[in-house]
Image: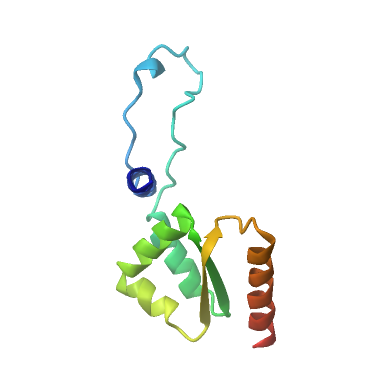
Length: 129
């Protein structure tokens, strides 16, 4: 569902960048002090999430294994953000970063074959040290 994926992406990016969602009509009727069911969590102060992730991975000097699943909106959003950033591309092409893509897998690698592949890649990566 590309429309939902795009909507989710912009919603997450807006939240990461500190944009506020407009209040829903039924929020006005909520009693004072009551939390809104539709309220988005407050965005953390500071840089957007992709920038904080980039800084954290840049600061970490150890080896990194990144395994992405192909049937996963979160992984697709991450891939889109990293493709659009020269800094991310530089980091991900570093010799200390190993990236694997399991195209048919979902976000949780819910099939045994997918989990087995993740375990194999992880074992190979650890042995490569």
